[in-house]
Length: 327
Ligand SMILES: [Fe+2]
Image (cartoon, rainbow, N blue to C red; front, side, top):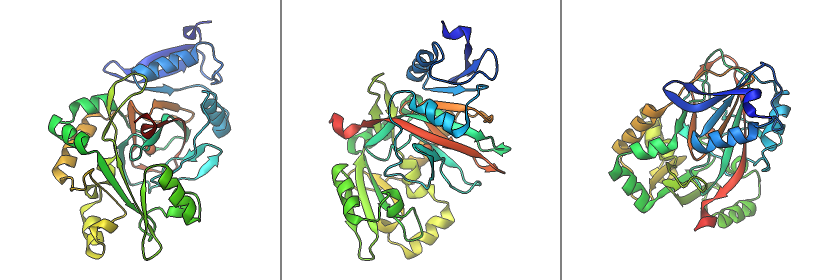
């Protein structure tokens, strides 16, 4: 049985290839990995275009989503060394980042601020927002190509040093990030993952890690922009918050920040140029309840638009990749 007997696959629009929109010929068809030809069609679309939007299928809620994501063959990953607050809904399925609805979450590849990340990420829209709340996406290969060469070269020469200070009411506490109350467990995790950790006099934790700015996709061999400098850099704070924080905190104690890998500051103007490229490449589409968005996490970045009213998007990740293991 061929996939096109069951389903229709088409670009989002005439001018926009990402994501490939896959719909059943008969709306309401149950979404399962067993659907003839569907896995091959999706894998091809992921490896070329970078993302697939599965729409108008039926799925048995969050449990059905969990089964669908797990059916791709790799165990669903826990949200380890996370950067934002999330709650596990069922095993391997998490709420999307629990930031206040009025906030924008900029484009990012999941866990690009560290050396290990999921290759696959799925989003399931259990409840579509009434207004806003899209999950914008963007092609990380195009972003790589459009970042001005001097910036890319400078980022690549040194890598990026991410510094995080946990807790203190300003950021996610280390107990939540590492899912333990045991400091020795945290130290062990950091040692195993190339993260420098420092317990401060007040009992709080600071970590530092030098990571990639760009990366080469292990299957397609394409280069992608792969970092979260624009999220971690102090310029991501609104100017009033930045000023207030720096009135009572040393820069080294900011909840999060990023430097060139040699420890020198990254200029605000550099981040402005990066953000301009990200804005140009942003692809936006409205969620429909029941949608599943599946992305190659290296080829495609994702974000969150502000919203009003209820919105329930859950996330699953799989297929861990370790940059450290490749060195
Ligand atoms: Fe994310």
